[in-house]
Amino acid sequence: MAHSLAEAYVHRAGLAWPRLIVDGDRPVGFLMAFLDIDWHEDGSAIRSGLWRLNIAAEEQGKGYGRFAVDSVAAELRRRGAQEMYVTWHPGPDGPEEFYLRLGFRKNGETSGDQTVGVLDLP
Image (cartoon, rainbow, N blue to C red):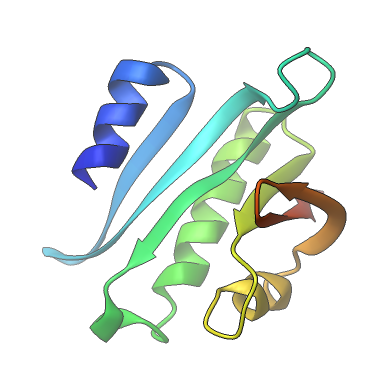
């Protein structure tokens, strides 16, 4: 989290939306969204989405990840976004099934070695 917060406030000031996920007074995870990032670095694709999502191992499977994704989606809708993006490392231990269950679809792009997913925000 420390690296993510430094990145949010030093390198990406105004473009990152970091949030601690708590249940009562107990921290259970961390998320960071990205806001209006120039995805292709040429102005052709300005995107917003979920940059980082970490749920404590012992808290996984309890709905906190879904809550986090829904919270980012609500914020992006409030800001007028029509889509929400996320990337993940493919593989049997990765989060692909989680994101697909939430309605993300692969859009055929990659970002480095990561799969790009998009969720429509009606």
